[in-house]
Amino acid sequence: MKRIALALLLGLPVVSAAQTVPDKHPRVRQALQHALRSEPQTIEEQIAICQIPAPPFKEAARAADFRRRLETLGLRNVRIDAEGNVIAERPGLPGEPTVLISGHLDTVFPEGTDVSVKREGTLLKGPGIGDDCRGLAVVLAVARSLNAASVATRGTILFVGTVGEEGPGNLRGVRHLFANSLKDRVDYFISVDGTGLDLTKDAVGSNRYRVRYKGPGGHSYGAFGMPNPVHALGRAIAKVSEFQVPREPRVTFNVGVIEGGTSVNSIAFAASMDVDMRSPDPAALARLDAEFQKAIRAALEEENNRWQSPVRLTLEVDTIGIRPAGSQPQSAPIVQAGLRAGAALGIRPETNASSTDANIPISLSIPAVTIDGGGGEGGHSLDESFDTRNSHLGTQWALLYVLTLAGVR
Ligand SMILES: [Zn+2]
Image (tube, rainbow, N blue to C red; front, side, top):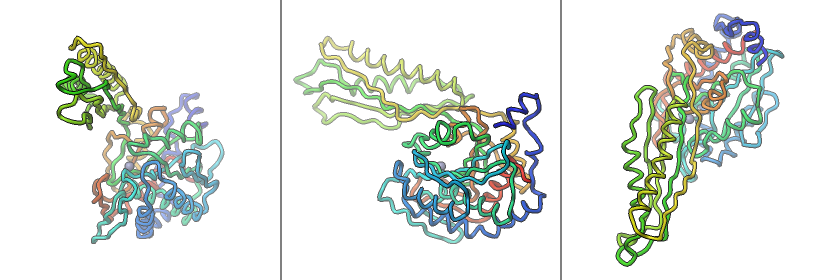
């Protein structure tokens, strides 16, 4: 923090000598070589981590294993915080920036999912193998390569495994880091999440709700004439489906799940929907949210007023998840550092917007990105795969990116 605060105070650009890509430094070259040579070990670790189940809110076994791996690397002050995040430190000099590199421990897969990993040629197949066992393995590989080449950094590096990145967790791990365990300690945040070689600089915010209309319900013939929760829900969905949103900034909405009713000849006592609204623009998301709140209340009024009945439906709105939005310019030093580190390795990352652990620091105006960990193929499915061809580039990129931000002595 201090260095940036001082630079701002003196009106100096925050891009400093510390953000030169140190790819010519002899020890850094050794570390990059080590990352290449030890990529098979990185992949072995990726597989081993992945075969420990980590459903949402049940990351403890994987966290304990990750902690042990960080301890084996000789990192300092290895600990698990009150939320379940694993944290380790590699100290630099006082007054220099602190760089955090993390992967997330949780998966989207429920308990009982077969998490065994199979190899098919260059492909690894298994739930979570890319998202985010790859990120965790890269975090470990960065620490291992730094140690193997005895790289001394100016800034301190924090190595972290977070809990609760996926939907149900609602970023609970990273929220805790910035509100509690690492409050005011992090100058740069890099999350390694998923496969490919791109860079997320903008945080897609999301507001998610479960909306439920409730009433006494009754017989469809005998109790006819009372407001109907399913009908109220239908009115609400009709309104949501007519929302007009801008294309730029991108704003999206979706009714993803509907539930309710017991039989064809019953007025239901409850009907509900799960709704997701997203945008990288906080103001645009807030406008859509306000329109949504109005629409679901209008639907309730209309259904209640439709009938001359003493019965009134009620509306319950539960927050399923709120992820803050935010963006950073392409010229932001943390973005430029990532692109230059990539270019030094001959890769050209594209920048994009996504919903990741970086949402929290970005929303707090702390420089933060999410980078892919190399390799290929998409996540969140049971036949998720990871292509190991040239996957060392992901490891090397993360390594050089961290060193660009932390500076080398
Ligand atoms: Zn992920």
